[in-house]
Length: 308
Ligand code: DGY
Image (tube, rainbow, N blue to C red; front, side):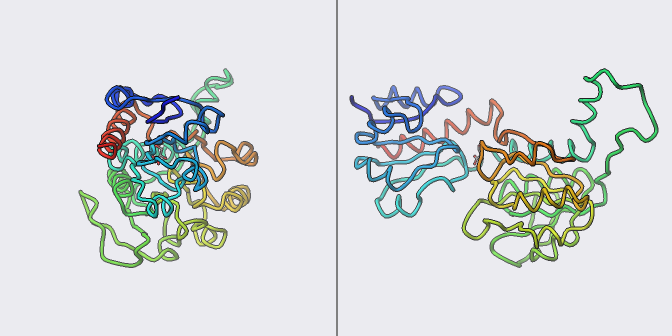
């Protein structure tokens, strides 16, 4: 078997097939199947999905590896230090999924605060008896503060959306306290985390999962939030202490939690499935046709450059 490029599935659009035509041979094999594992020994370019953690042992098994690509902007599932030590190029997909991910966060926010899932379920159940003054009352957003964790492109794109809703965005980022963040139509203050949490009606996560951000929103942090605050996570599961969030939601301290990502996905803590005021998506942040095709194009261009 001759394998130059190893991937676990086709990507959206023609980019991966084009790469395979330009640099034969491309093998598609399920992640960690015997075929995939055997092929590592010849592979020059390995393509991973966000759901496929690559280990240093995989690099040991792939002595010819020149590039490790991921069909994601997030790289927390890759052995970055080991790649750097071995001169393996890491290629990811920054930039092209900014709007799609911010849109997903907005969808979760509006679904929660305007009780979209409950309303839809009511109509589908056939039990809806008609308009009523106090039926499925939600919560308005205009005039409230939105705390955004992460001031990079996705955080800023989400800020623009909350600004359009009449909210006041404020930022925390890993660089600590600094000047205002210019998010396009306005500027927003950068705050230390306790200050941001104590004044935010909504907190949305837009930072990568790193040693610094793992468990960032732990129980103590969540307890700083005002009563009825809403949390949105389209970043990575490990940043939010899910157990603490479920406890506070159950106790009525939080107004809602919207999740697109989970600590051990695709496992979902069964407590979420019973949790009131939770909206749960299956990691759809970048899932538009346009975005996934653009991600594939960017990734394959980077891999082609690494192959020379
Ligand atoms: C990413 O790109 O990191 C998303 O989580 C998946 O598209």
